[in-house]
Image 1 (cartoon, helix red, strand yellow):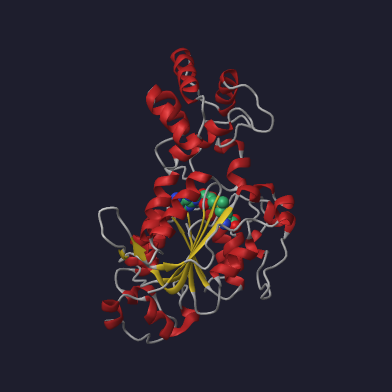
Image 2: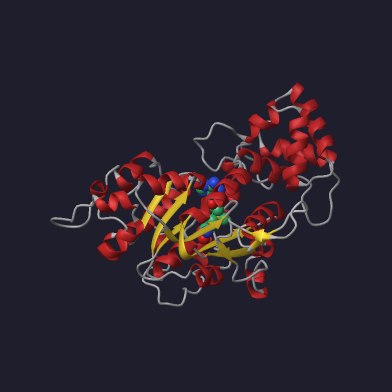
Length: 392
Ligand SMILES: C[S@@+](CC[C@H](N)C(=O)[O-])C[C@H]1O[C@@H](n2cnc3c(N)ncnc32)[C@H](O)[C@@H]1O
C-alpha cells in the first residue's frame, strides 16, 4: 500500500492557496476545518485519499538500509550536487538544474511530476518548497516514492498510474490547476538495467518490457502473436529500422518452430538479420520499438500533452524531457500548435487569430545537456528539454 497521510499535500500551503486549486462548486461547499488538519473527505468525492487507495500498489525493492529518500532532503536552495552513488542506484536525473530552473519550485506551488522514476527531479522540487503530486506506473518507482513521502509527508503525494490519466485524477480530487507539469519520458536506468524486466538486449531475461507489470501485454505477446505486417510497422515506425520487414519475417519463421520468450533469443535472432554496425547493437532499434509498443508510450504522451493546457494555471509551465526524435516531434508540434498567435490556411485570404493559443515559449529551441553532463551521464546525450508557459 502507498504510504498515505490524510493531512496530505495541501495542509502546509494554507487554506487560501487550497481554494485556488479547487473547482468552484467544491470551494463553495468547502467546510472550514473544525479541528486538526484539513482532511480530504472534506472535499467531497473522497479527494486524494480514495484515489490513493485506488491507485495504490507499490513495492519496496531497494536493498534494505538504502534510502534514496535521504538524498536531497532539506537541501539548500541550490539543487544538491549530484548525490552520486546513492542517486545512481536507481536513476541519475537528466538536466536537473535546467528542470529546476524552468519548473521553478517555490513554497505554495503545486507541481506534478508525471514520471517519478527514482525521484531525482521530484526531490529537487520538494527542496525548492513546492508540493508535488508524483505519478509513475511502475511499482518499483512507487516504492521509491513511498519512501520519499515518509520524509515529506506534508508535501509529496505519490500515485501509481499512467500519466495520461492525470485529468481524471485531478478532477476527482477537486484540484483546479497545477503550477507546473514535468514529463521525463521513457525508461529509468533501473528498468533498463534490471534483467528481469526484459527491457535490454544486453542481459538475458524474460521478454517482458512492461513498465506496469499489471498490464496485460508483454513484448513476448507481441513478438509471438502479431502478424508480419504489424511487426514491420512498429519496427519501422517506432524503431526507424530499415530492415523491419526482414526482422519480422525472421521472427515469424523462428516462432513457428519455438516461441521466442527471452531477450537473449530475440537479440540473437535480430543479429542474424542485421549486420553489426560500429556503435549500436543490431537489436537496439527493435528493442526500442517493442518497448514503445508494449507501453503505448507515444499514445500516452500525446494524450497527456493534449490536456496539459487545461490543467496549468496561468504562468505555470509544461517541462518535457524526451530521448528520441519521435517523442520530441510530438512535444514540439504540440507546443508550436498552441503558441502561434495566428494560424493560416491556403484557403483563407489572411491569417486568423489562433483560438487555441495557450502558451508562450520562453525558449523556442530544445535545450540540450551541457558538455559536462553529457560526459558524466551518457544517457543525457540524446535528451531534449522543451518548455511552454501557460498564458491565459
Ligand atoms: C526517465 S524515468 C524518470 C526519471 C525521474 N525523472 C528521475 O529523476 O528519477 C521515466 C519514468 O517514467 C515512468 N513512465 C513512463 N511512461 C509513463 C506513463 N505513461 N505513466 C506513468 N509513468 C510512466 C517510467 O516507469 C519511469 O519510471
